[in-house]
Image (cartoon, rainbow, N blue to C red; front, side, top):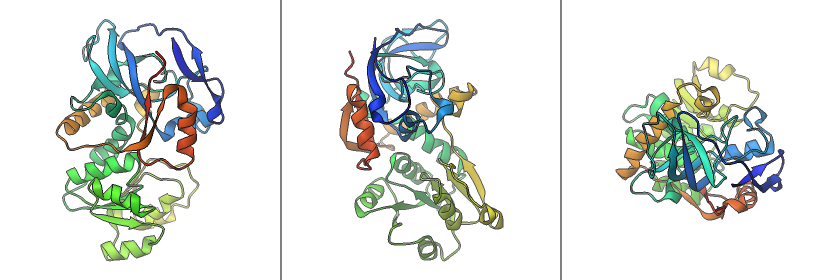
Length: 332
């Protein structure tokens, strides 16, 4: 069968179309005919070699998100049956090949029946960003009604889902963005207050919105050096959640303010083979919210075919993308 693969790390040009062996069914797995996927920063990091510990064996098939139809099920599979329309997180890391192929083999714990009110394309954009935001906001934030929650990168893939989840918990949501357009996006997904971090520094907006005391919870979807901004923005004894701790940082401020720091690494169950069922459970919970009209996805204006995956990576890395980049399977 055809797949888009990489045989080495590097720039977007390392992608190539290749005939690979048809996946053999194994216990606990299902065979899915892929309809669509979507691009995440994770895939650009794997492709570039930034995360060598989680690169699948070469020739590597990337991409975590997928939607499609179940073609075969192994003995003992209980969650789905042949013909079911599903969405999920196939992996695309370590020993789990990704979605950029005609067919994929998926652990039944990593998928779910797709939301009935979404088509395959829409469903394929939700998994990674949705699960990440869910891990942060629903499982780890302890947000209470009227808590002041600051979300960095609120118009991004994870950020705009986090805004919606925080509002479902009755928080007051403060969204940092880089321009007016992204501010309008964050507002449209429920943010109460918009902060342009290019025109307002941390001290200014902390004083403006919290009287200098700081936010109850800060969710940092940017990470890196922005962690220091998060420490400055959170209240004494507050919580900072982050999706990126790849930085060398003096933690004195964290200590002096008694800040709790929680790193969100949603691929951990796939890497460690521990508690994989949690992924499927979150997908199912998200499905209910999506079908109730309480969770929406922001799609970028551009979309690409699987055969155009190099162009999709180039587009993402140019900084032009706003929302999830849809990838449509054209390999079969």
